[in-house]
Length: 86
Length: 192
Image 1 (spheres, rainbow over the protein chains, first blue to last red):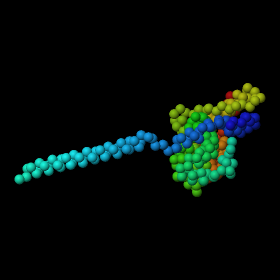
Image 2 (image 1 turned 90 degrees about the vertical axis):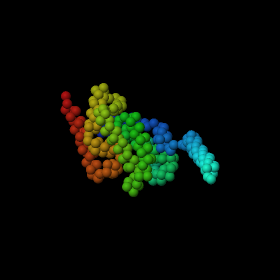
Image 3 (image 1 turned 30 degrees about the horizontal axis):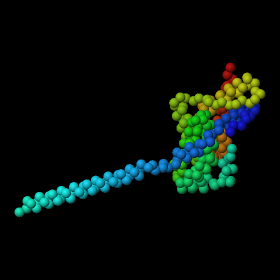
Image 4 (image 1 turned 90 degrees about the horizontal axis):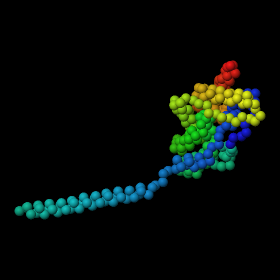
């Protein structure tokens, strides 16, 4: 909002102060939305839960593999030791 | 333009809106932005005389307000004072940065009243340029007090709160700033 410039008075300092007040340009209308975009918390993206579940699956698989190997090794050692014992 | 005071009489107070924003209500924050963005922008523009920079800093001011709203203590002063203090700090920092980078420039273009003679116009532009330069050359404290109190017409008591000094100090800074600006004008008059 820039009103019509006021006519000059006898005091240049007052004229200049008035001119400084009047010369401020209009602020953009969409600034509020732009600010809100910056402060809005980020939305959760689709790949985040997917990554989460893939991670869970990987941990589960690793645990199952470890368990299987341990059972297998235990069985073999048991058999070997049983055969070796008198 | 709707003044903050006029809006306050019909809609929620700043304190009510702040409470809502603290509870995560962005709509309340949007109302605070609408209420104060023009004034914040004007303050930034008066310091910087650069539309784009003033707009960027207006955004930055509100982003900082949102991030630090939990730190705002209503018992220590009005929200507007806290807001304008952040705006002033950002403007001062930007001015200091600009001064370091490329020195100061005068960017003011003011429309001239109709019916003024070309010689009068030239003289008027000279005066404006002279005063702009003189304002830029004022010590930071005088410059801030003058811009907030004289150009932006904030109440002196609020300027004192923003600056964190007694009211008398602000009065004296404004008066000293005016003196220095008048001196700058007189110097120009005496130059050949």
